[in-house]
Image (tube, rainbow, N blue to C red):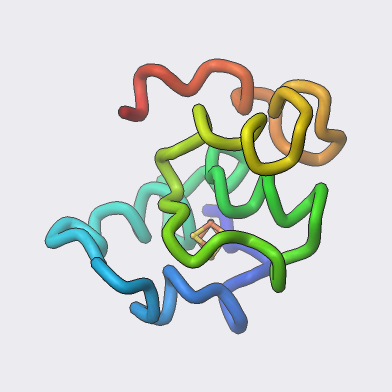
Length: 93
Ligand code: SF4
């Protein structure tokens, strides 16, 4: 079981993004909390490690690791604490 350290403040977890996907509950179980959750793969968490949660774009969804480099300027695999799977995001698209 994994619980993301950003649960209290994360806009995605609290359904505050402009267009919440219909499968948001499934995504929360996959990334945010629960027995099978793995927040090391979450694009929002990876970006937050680099720029701070307050500067994570409102339209960034957990599965969009391919956007991390464009937002932070560096590949996700180089962000310490970004998670071991941050560099392999294509399977999350
Ligand atoms: S969306 Fe990502 S950063 Fe937000 S609570 Fe879930 S795992 Fe953490």
